[in-house]
Amino acid sequence: MNLGNSIRHGAKWVFIGNTGSQVINFALGLILARLMMPSDFGMVATIMIFTGLAGFIAGGGMGQALVRAKEASKRDYDLLFTLQLLIGAAIFGFFYAIAPWFAKWYAEPLYADLLRVSALSFFIRPFFNVPSNILFRAMQFKAKTMVQFANLVAYNAVSLSMAFLGYGPWSLVVASLVSSVIGAALFAKAARWMPGLSLDLARARELARYGFLVSANNIVGYLRGQAATFVLSRAVGPASVGIFDKARSVSSKPHGFITGSVYEVLFRALATEQDNLDKCRYLFFRSITLVLVYAMPFYVGMMWLAKPLVITLYGQRWAETAEPLALLCLAGPFMVVENLSGAVLAARSWLGRELLPQIIMVVVTSAAAVMGLEYGLKGVAIGLTLAAAYMATHMFWLAKQAIQARWLDLLIAFRPALLLNLILATALLSAEYVLPDVVKSHPIPYVLAMTAAGGLVYALSFLYLPLGTLQTEQQRWIAKFRLPGNQLA
Figure (cartoon, rainbow, N blue to C red):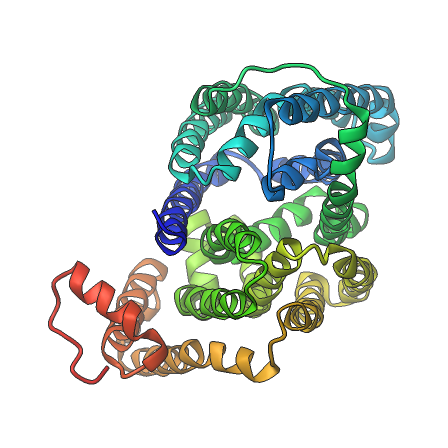
């Protein structure tokens, strides 16, 4: 299979995995939201600020270093496993020791036990991460997707069962541990990997040079992502943390299942073609165009329907989620540019240059959250959106230098999505005037009617408008569903 077909095949399976995971999690999350209180989610989100950060330290970035390396042996993976196991044991010991002080800091005794049990995951991660990296390097995305689905089924079966029985935040913590164990076993089987030990310090130093930059960027990026949650957890308590975390979670769904799907395959393809700048530019800007075309209508729709959508999906007690959700959707296109620019920098070993804007963003995001608090969750959402705009600009500036591109290329890549979504917004505005008041006064019929109208207009515009850069994509969908041909393309 040539590179182009490998990329499309890999992207298809990563997309299926990410999309399926997002859809299933979203659907089952609706049930969890009705079984659990916002404060339950807020407590787990607070714990994850710290365990998530430690997770990047445990990985050390060396897994991605092996994915990118020209060669990777069994001994390399044994070394990766050994180092992650040792680091994971040290992290567990640290969290176990500080748990009482952590609970005291938040004035909630339950945090001590939640933190200690959550930290058990660091013993499982090496068994999960190493075979996953083996499959990633081999571009066996179908196998990864199958394991991810099984993992997802286990997580949701445990979390829903425990939530129904009234275990609150424990539902999410225990489900994560159980699914990690199952996922580790299935990944090992799919990769035909058996754990082994190695302490080749010379090779460890070689991998650590690249891995350190990956890890540093991931840690700083994670701190930036969690800064608002940390500020809110100390200032307004777990209930508001749960509300805001839900808004961020919903607003990031398109980014997660579309951009995230493309990132993995784009990174691997750019690493393979790193000496061919023309090919790198094509892959990068083509990815931006397609991701925006598929993701932006979700952002526009969620902005328009935020309040009735939240009430329909999660119930009246989550209604406060709507305002920050609508504002955070504005950050969607910026997240696409930032994320895919990051794939360029990672593939071309420019991660050192990415570190500075990431550090700046930690400060900017923290300041935005603190200043935004004066205006409530709405103010925090506005601050984070402005910060995302800055970060996208800085990251693209670096990426364009790495592959010798132009600002104009980015504008051209945006053009199809901007046109299609302007048509979508016009259609939604028109539908708003046409719908009778009896429909608009009830959230569920209103959401269904507006979604149907907007979706139909967007689909027809996408398939049949003469958009030259999308002609291949249009013809592929027309052929797939045996639709009438696009005579204008």
